[in-house]
Image (cartoon, rainbow, N blue to C red; front, side):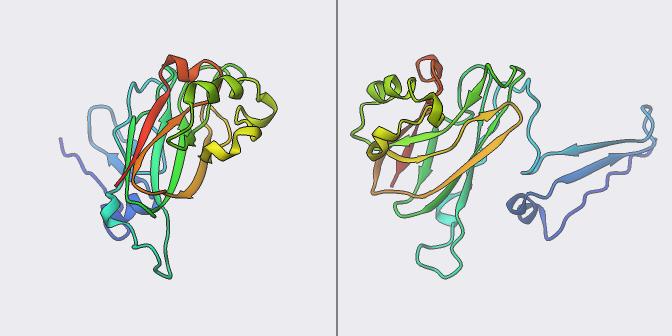
Length: 197
């Protein structure tokens, strides 16, 4: 039997990934009959049962240089998972780089039981103290306004199937902790590190 695969490319696979265009795979003549599948390049997400998403961080050296007239942020895709972890525990960046964090929550839990956010903290912040105060900031999405000076960037909360973003310029070289500040998530292991070179 003959299988015909049709790949739809705009300018090439890397351009499709950069613009969020899905690559469509179609199969015909197979024993299953004509069937269509869509493979995620950048826009679709893995199913809720996925235990881990591969890193989708672009090379920081390939980003548009700071100060150029057409500077666009480098997007880092993270997933917040049902097992209370981020899909990536480490993000690498250059000092002064414009970064967009796109957090997509993947899970089967009802929205009132499971939400995630991304909060990037200053290196001198006491993460455990921040998390204690954040647990009382329900009306502000568990991002305490009184600790604004310790926060570099934060997203709003995202329930399963939702995506939230935040854009920021990376600070000086160093290591910067990021957490999900929804109650109980940091303690369960939902944390990571931004490493700026």
